[in-house]
Length: 247
Image 1: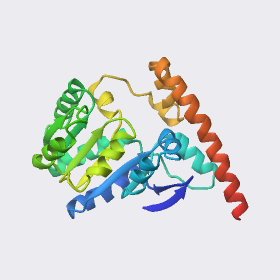
Image 2: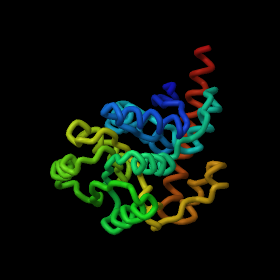
Image 3: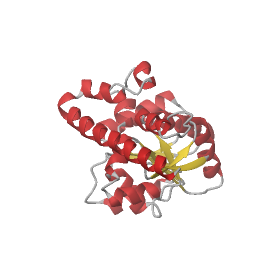
Image 4: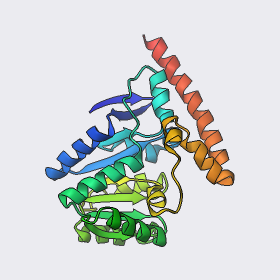
């Protein structure tokens, strides 16, 4: 797994399969691994959010999620084999955990959603060991939740909370969670539980998942994507200019 500094952020150049192998090996050696995926919104926001930037840069694995990052990196001259979508990696790790009896913990989303996610995973992977789960509205009792996760005996923790809360929560408590692997998974539980639909494969392939989200939630999403995508284009040309001048 090769790490490059792309648009001011360290990113690991790897496929989904390669990432799963690295994580599996680390878990087998009981080596703690803090994981994050970087998409357009996260890259844009970390430019001015120092805490988020530190939480991302301190991760052991930083995967490239979102076709925007992949296309932007290609434009800058980097060879990115594929995007590592958070939900795809999550499902691969769930499958791996079921086969190897790695206990998992699900943290985040609304109470009904995380319960339905646990139920769906149990039906999809009957051998999965779900050590526990908890909703994502616990900010007045963070330490209590951390202790609960530690006491569960889970090896893998998946945190489905919005950014930058999840990245900062993970980085703040990583040494006390008691798990071997921790990963932020954003809205993954919403998709797995059936609350929201994921974009069709053809839209995923052409990097149009953001457009699918706008169609589903136009009032909430259109401004967010308009602003972040515009800033991202500016960021690409800023670093393109820097790379050309450094040659």
